[in-house]
Length: 422
Figure (cartoon, helix red, strand yellow):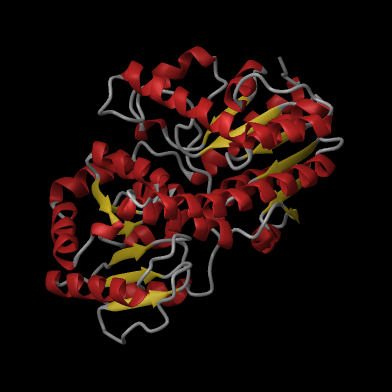
């Protein structure tokens, strides 16, 4: 069968689709990937055929980060927020048009179209145009539910999320109407989430149900169309794995620090804070720079900085992990059975900050409010024996990467075979 998998986002967003694509390819299927131009090489390194999908991620990601950073610090400066919003909207509109053009060509003749949440509506319209099954992939509870915002009563939480879906659809409606007109489809009368559900599409939940207690029971009414498979990762080795292992084994287990594709504004200041906090606690720090520039890192014995690493291989050897709250990084920490401190910067990262706090396997705060004193206090808290014990217990309830990938691929294959549309 022919599968087209589209994912727009950072590496952490794209990796789950790559994981499924690689497994489908291993099973003998024809697989085509559509990913941001700057991640085509990543998909190809996994053995997949990939084409450029939309714009390079770095610019829209920076615009998004800048908007939310400014919003949390200067929400009363409306003109500046409007300017930043317009910058982001122009990029979004351009990217929408490019992704539609690419996917329309790529999906011709496909047995199933598979998409992550980025431009999910674009993919849904393409699947409708070709009258083929659509499968979506979510790495946190994206659809309206009563569990995501536990401070609100469940009915109110569902209503708030439903309202957000409608507002987002109305904001994007002009762009979507243009795409559907170009495809010869009638104007949509409901958000993509509603249309996807009405078509009976598969909506894979790429995280463990243990992370959001009560959600599986709430969604049981969907009759298996929203299955929980666990986080999808491919755990590619890196060039520094042996170096990292040697450094870890040379002394006491370190604390991991990393912020993935979310760049920190002041790398030197951030590293100084990490170094000072760990020195005060008598701990070592293993820092993965990701997209941040830590090239001026001081040469101190208790801190090691690398540009990348294999989280699955490294985290079990750490005392704790401190990161931005990306889905893949959070899952790697939970699977490793070590406590977590999430220093979140963007709204979706706060979702995982809330999850680890509710599970009592870690704690969280906004990155911009972090100081040396707060970092020391937060680390003391999660390094306590009760946090470590709960983290080890939660790890026993996490699916393994191999299990997650196999189940996800089975679901996608079955959906394509059934051709379940409507």
